Image 1 (cartoon, rainbow, N blue to C red):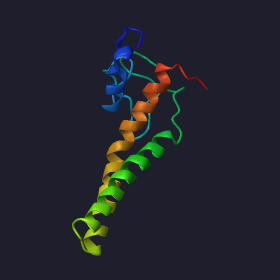
Image 2 (image 1 turned 135 degrees about the horizontal axis):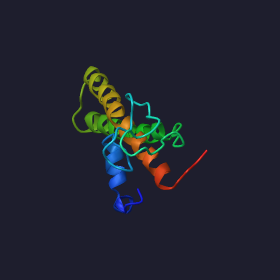
Image 3 (image 1 turned 30 degrees about the vertical axis):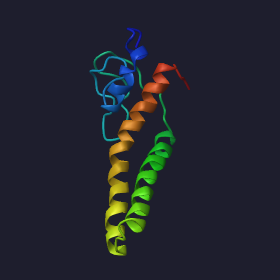
Image 4 (image 1 turned 180 degrees about the horizontal axis):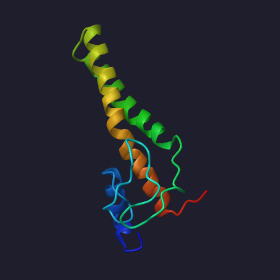
Length: 119
């Protein structure tokens, strides 16, 4: 990140895509949500970047807002039946949460690495 790329925000783009925020080439995750110990390409240590529950809060706020807004529009504007509401909006909230979670966790790791947060 000392190459100036972090100043342009490319470290966050790489993290959203699941790549190393420092070099943009190595893998950030070794499984779905398990952050790798270090980048295999540039060797940046990811161990100090512990995200805790931070990404979960943002996922809940974003997915909850979208699902609740869609639910209200479906009830008030389109007059959907209850079975349709209960089949569409919870499924969308779960799918959106599963998509957003690794992205936002990557952003939190990149943010901690950019600001040199340590234990």
